[in-house]
Length: 197
Length: 197
Image (tube, rainbow over all chains, first blue to last red; front, side, top):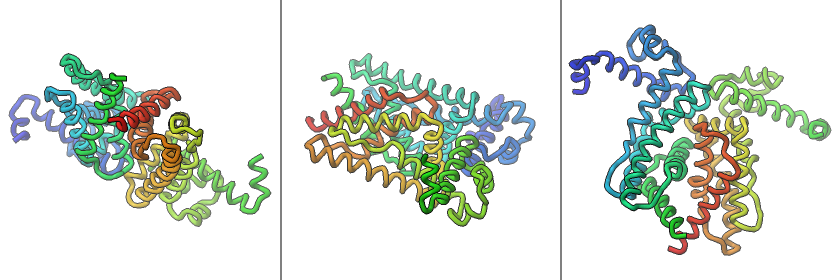
């Protein structure tokens, strides 16, 4: 269905090539780890010419950066449930679900590999963090407008995302929606208590 | 001084070889990343014969596992200051200091790489987590014996270690002792509030 649509609309071929290339990168990162494949490997896996990869992305670093950013900013969308508790719980559970899959884990490993890989990597990491912070800030601003507690975006990174990410990266078993909900509830309780102190 | 001692005592040469090999692995992980060097590279860097590495460690995975576990369990020692707040603050600041250095970051990346690297890796990760939990549990048991709040070892992972690790892995700048202290204070406040609720 999605494929047919891509064929029909203008730019459909280009979009299909992009999707195939992104999938090839995700597969190679999952199978071999970042740093263990070349532009040629990606081209072969995606069934496109090497030259079209170089024309479009220039370098392997630019391409993997594009893939990691796209994946991480389009998955785990920010919910708008009408309450901060509902938004935080929904968001945390979505992140847990996404990083449990092999693709999510690969994307997370990729951002970490890129953060340690010089300037292009630092750019990718900054883009990802900036974009996620912007999305989360909108959610927090809506809550404040409703008179709910003022949670900080950085606290969401420290006390919801970091525990989910580290448990997953350390291979401590799949993180569950229940664990994610508890982290969200804990952050909210902590913010409310801090407000009272 | 330490070197002279190693020469004099029985097993001194063995201990020096071990130290040189461990340092070589740390250097190669820092420079090239895990997966991008061989037993031969380590032997060359450490100035020892390939055969002695194979005799002692068997495989590259066993060797890197030994290095990561040794580094992570001997650094960031658990303090015993007489108060839970002092212990948590001291421990958090020690972890922050250790992972700010290139060796600490390399060890952290190595544990993550190993966690995704099959059975030997899973063994390394389990050893590391089990040993750290045991050390932390002793600190928490001492606090409980003094009648202080019952913090869980897993909460230290989730709310002190995970934020420090993720900020570092994402390259968000060096984590400071002040940030580490705030995470420790936050966990303690949260545990006390939960006790009152």
